[in-house]
Each structure stands twice: as C-alpha cells, then as structure tokens.
Length: 406
Image (tube, rainbow, N blue to C red; front, top):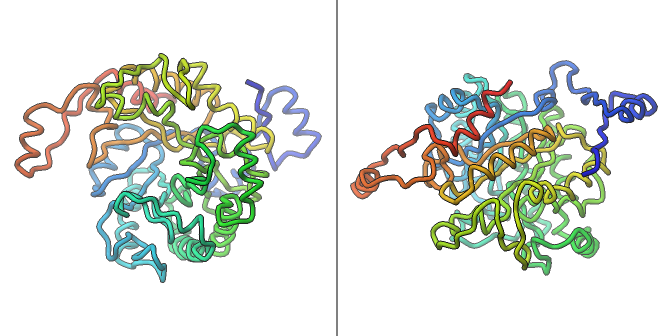
C-alpha cells in the first residue's frame, strides 16, 4: 500500500513538505489549551456499549479491562416516549428531560472511571432504528429533506446540553447511515460505481456528505469544541467514503468505518446454518469466492486509506468504530489478531463490538467459542437473567492483551 502522507494544520507548507518527505509526523494543533480533540491525537482503543440496561458495574468492568473510550448507543433504553431522548422520531419537538438526565447519569459513571464516551444514536428523526421499527428500515431521512432540519435541531439541542460534559469525547452523528440502500448500488460496488452513484444523487436527500455538513454546522452553533465522528455510507463501509468530493471542512472531525467483512464468515449464520466458512479461507464476497487472509483484510481498506491520503486526513482522525465476529466461528481468534495488527500498524483508533452485551451472547468474547451450558438455559427458562459463563479464553485474550499494551 502507498505511504499515507500526513498533514498538520499547525505546520507551514514548506516545513510540512520537508517533514513528510522524511516520513515524519507532527500531530494536529489540538494540544492547544486542552481541547477535546487532543484526546484523539494518539491511538485510542475502546469498546461498544449497546446494552438495554446501563449499569455502573459495566463501567467498572470496562475500566478493569483498560478500555479508553466507549461508543455508546442508548436506543435500547426505556424512555419517556417511543424513541429514547427524541420522544418521537416521526416528529422531533425537543429532548426528553427525563431521558437526558438518565444519559447524564451514565456519563457521570464513565467520567468517574476515566472513560471517554462517544454518543452514537441509532435513531434520528426520519430514521428510526430498524429493531425499534418492526424490522423495517426507515428511509425517510434519505428521501425527504424536511427531516434534515429536524436532525439538525436534535443535534443542536443535544450538543447544547453536553458541550461542557467532561465525559463526552465525541458526537457520532448517526450509526451506519444507508442513503444508498435500495437505490441501485450494491454494497460491494467498485469505487467507480460509488462515484457514479454520487454524481447522480448529489444535492438530493441521499447526499450524506451534505447532510453531515449541515448537521455539523448546527452543532457548531452551540459547541465549537467537541469532536464529531461521521460514519461512511452503506452501513459504514470503508469504501463508501471514496465518493465524497472532499474531507469535511471542520478540523475536529473523525472519519469512522465499521468492519464485519467478509460477512459470510463473521455472521452468526455461518455457525447456526453450518455454512462452515473459516478464517483464513475461501469465503463468498461480492458475487465470487475469494481467499480472505491477512493480505486480503489490508486490501479491503485500501480505498479508504487512499481517499484519506488524497484528502490529507491523518490516521489519528480515522476510526474503525466497530469490528466483530460471531464468537463461535472457526478462525475468529486469527481474524481478530490480523485485523487488530493492521489497525495498530496504521495507528487507527478502534472499538470492538461488543463488550458484555446484555441481550445477545454472540459477540461476548469473554465466553469464548463454546456454548452457554445447560444451567444457563435452565435459568433463562425460569425467567431469570443469569450471567454468561465468562472466563479467560484464547479468543478474548487477543482483545484483552491490547488493553495491556502501553
């Protein structure tokens, strides 16, 4: 892969060019006056928090593991209205004060344990999370621009409330946006096909780049400091950044992607349907069968890395905000090892999915690759909420050791 040329807005053009010629890097000028973006100047390793019930014990466990930051989605929490915090994603009219207080309590737990939190809504006005919408994907935000103004108002309101909260390390505007969904573009399309799609949809409600520009402007009306994380399109695919005409103008933006490819391997269906795909190995992807191994994982990220290079985005502004694999799939341990090694080499921030999720055990890696056991399921049948049999195991050790590294 080509060397990524790094850029520092604090270094003049000639000096920057000389430093880059020698492969040296000077970080952005965020060390000034303790700005929040300074947290992201060095590589950060974290976890995703997508639980139904937030507890202090979860944050105790995260601290014990060594988690530096948490990407937090609150959409499963019980709230005042149908949609937590928004009350109603069909028509946003203001934040729920009760829900906001609950969120602030959880942020206090994180702050007390020295963990930064990135707020990551799964729902925005006109885009209700499918699991809270009867399994139906809500596309109104990407089809009717009237919902953009509601999304701007929501984020302006939330940023006004959280701008001075010391636990907040960032705002992730929306989780896995899909303006491309069912618009004639395949997820695994080529870079050229992605760019052709954008030429057709630029300036429409499907224009994710312009949507982010508007929401960021709304946030900056009330909060000029908190970093803003933006997911790429089509479920945050790395190559979905390649159709953007440029980087965003805001210098406190983090560019985020998710990694679950090849999905035929990482999915729980690989195990439950006995498909038998393993890593490294031959796995269907993009209409053909390919060998997925360490080198193929790296090639998968190349379009994103090239786009970042072309737009002078340094690695410390790039995030693999989710990655995961069904824990029982053969080769999951090796998959994590190769992927984490790649991200560390590139100094990309990352957060694994998920840590001690309370509604699904499939990506609770502390359980290991085995089953939950008869006693666990008997307790479930009795209506109890047993703790999964977490223990030291080779799979979780791949992740655990990362938080022990300096």
